[in-house]
Length: 140
Image (cartoon, rainbow, N blue to C red; front, side, top):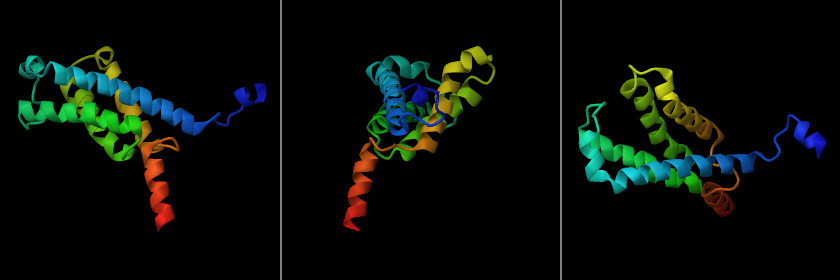
């Protein structure tokens, strides 16, 4: 056991990817649900940073956070689902908070980096993607 802990080899990479997806997706589901639940309260305070209109931009953020958070959590089309989250975090870090200090950007920056990590790692063995693509491989 000591050798496994001190080893440079991962204990179980797919389990790590699953935990990352569940925590990341769960946080975004929670944040996105709050935006849905308080839609009419938050919409007037939302700013249009990318020129699509306030309502459209807000709805895109809800899509990225809530619906893509669900897809990432279950591991369905994970790499595609994390792209809207990545774009939303780029907008937050580099446009919405551009005049703020790093302390104000920390959480958004962390989500940006985690989005990149999930994009690179993919969904892993414990995911809906793995189930779907294994079946397609067997059919072909």
